[in-house]
Length: 428
Length: 157
Image (cartoon, rainbow over all chains, first blue to last red; front, side):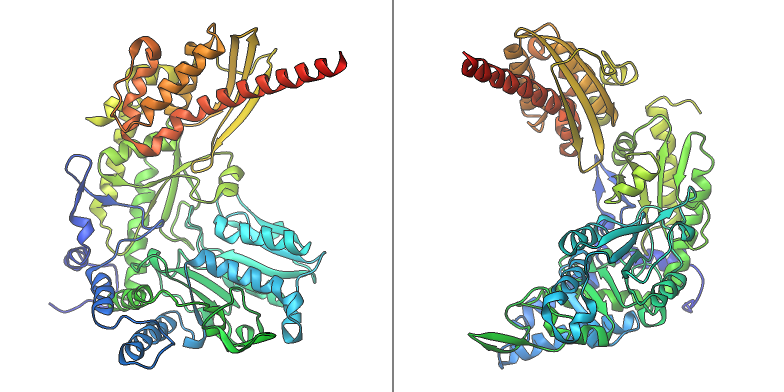
């Protein structure tokens, strides 16, 4: 069979992909086939990732960047090879990839490094954040790209400001003017609730105009579409391994090389040093400067295998596949009265997270009925509480997709929503 | 099917027609509780008459389980002594946190036995307890301020 190289995945390709994910064949809640629509929270892992982790641990395990024995060499090679492949996957240099525990840690790393700049002296002084400075975020951020900035403001006396969200779930670019005091503009590449993809180029242009740094939360974009940080021209970006078919416990911080060169460290200790004396220490060049302690290794190797897997399928095709699923979901949900999608109702500038509310059924109750049918969705505020508050709601039901989801699963979700309404006797 | 065991008619009835809903005066203490994982909220007021619960009033935003549990709570505690209410609360908590291992006492828990099915869904236990946490906190506040006043009176004498 000739491999297709464009367009959505075919049924036979999907079947092959699904066979790579052992968990997808299990049943839940009294023998229901699992319909996993919660990849926005965490994705499932293919055998190739699990095998890579296991092979590393069975054959090459050692502490990386220490020791001169053969295993140490092999482990270091595996770790650095993963770094190089992950870098290539998102269009950057290996030296610009900092391994972190997850995306949350990556954002905290930047926020703490910025506040450490004030006392680091030298070239880092340019990053110092002072009272009266501004940190800008958006109202649609995940708590991970909001709370660390609130804390940075608290530590430095800077002021947090934010772009608002329109009723349609888009970023309101008229709601805020940056100023010469704006030091950071941090925003999501794709809302984890609404799927909204804000205009990165315009936000970068505005930030650059006032000399502010840009920080991109790419957790929900990197697993689902081709992403090139160099082309996006952002200064920093983060993503998490476990949302992109990889292991938990590993994430990536991208930093533009010349910025990482002068940024002071966040966590300090072993591995990240150049010279240590009792009186004080100097630090290694990036990325090692930002990787204190023995790092997660089998996880990094697993993430390397995950990007190999995604690349083999093709990110263009994955994006198109998920766009089709999203379109099908939005069309199906629009048939229900008393159901409201929070966020864009078309697939323009939008990814595959679809959140909705029902007039007469709370999200938790809807999720419970769906769970009883074997359908795993997320319910609640999805770590974006201010966004929910902006829409005057406390919780939504969210379906989110990955490469392994099928049109039949979308049908199951839509049938499930019917069942929710029947169960709670909501009139049609 | 487990789902029907959790969403018993009695729970859905309380959800659709909650008892003693709304915030009323007078009251002795108020408590605001929130479930940080889902954003559900309850504001609950307690009015005591001596050691008896004279009224419980509340505003709640949340799922059927949390709303119904708060409605049932008011049935169980209004008109009873604080001590009786506390032992009912302990029995309720024991039941919903038991993962289905504790057989509830219908004489003590009355309508609240309907929440036994919730115990099988650990993620929903917090929903069933939200109103009770507010009640416990509000009663604690009344008692704390009574002790405060007692101490002040003692000082004044």
